[in-house]
Image (spheres, helix red, strand yellow):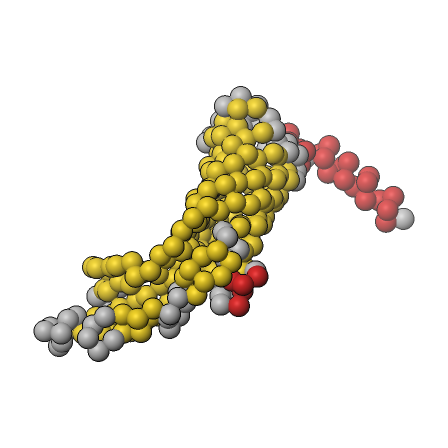
Length: 244
């Protein structure tokens, strides 16, 4: 009885609803204009999960990533990605200098990874759920940086890179975009993952810098393969009036 009633009720609502409301019901997918030259952009949070030898030294890394895509024909695009990840911080209260030892500042040491890459993306350009896959090559940079700042406003007035290593990064990834209607802007929820291969890297983690009495520093660096999975969740958008 209920199964017979629901289709009839749905039809009655659609018929009796105003024209604008009926348009909202049947336009679940945004109306996209095909374009041979289209720019679109992504931004979102990132979680990196180390694997292999890197996992023995680092639990996880968090950060933010952004991507830009240029599509000259469907369903192929070229995309560029930039990601900054942090996998540990150390904070100390230290004198500004040996001679200005009555002025105490906050010193923060952060362990970071930056990844820049470019490559082709193959995507499903239309539909309520739009899967995509891509491959990439680029550069990954592992660096440890220390900065000092004011304990009142938290702004850093001096910083220095203590340790760094970088090289070729390659990999592949994929995900899903779910389009949303936000006025006339093409917006989508974007979620996915990618495997980043960095090869062997030397890097520091929390506690690997030891300050010596003479003012010098001793590093206990780690060297291992430094591959990881990256997971992201964010939004994808295209300029108003242009398709994605």
